[in-house]
Image (tube, rainbow, N blue to C red; front, side, top):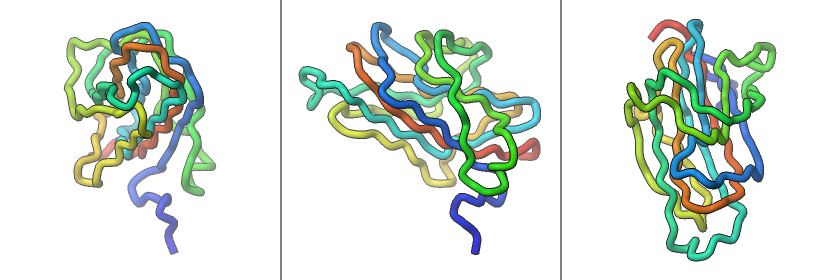
Length: 168
C-alpha cells in the first residue's frame, strides 16, 4: 500500500525552523522557495506559531501573502535543510532551496499575489489548500511567503512542497 507521502508526481520535502526572532520591519519574507531550471514545485502548505507574549495579541493579526514571480531574492535570511517525506526522496537531494526569515522582501516588480490572509497571533496558523488550489511555480520559479509585523516575535514555522519536474 502506498504511503500518503509517496507522491505519484514528485518527491515531497519539508523545512522547519524554531523560535527565530522576527522584528523591526514592516514586511519580511518568512519563507522563500527557489526552484531550478530542472524542476517546478508546488506549495503543499505551511504552518506558523509564535511564542512571545504580545500585548493585545488576542486582537492582533499578522498579514500573510503568498507571491510568485520575484526575480531577485530577499536578503538576510538563512537556508534551511530540506527533509524528505517519502522513501524515494530520502535517497535524493531537494532541488528547491528554502530560505527563511529574511530581513527584506524579494523583488516586488514582477511578483503576482496568489493568496492573502491574516494570522491571529494568539493561535497557530496553518495554510493547507485543497489539491486543486495548490500554487505551482514555473521552471526556475520563486515563491515567497510574506508577513507584515509591527513588533518583535519569536516564530516557528514549517513549509512543505512537492517537486513536480519539468513537464507541466
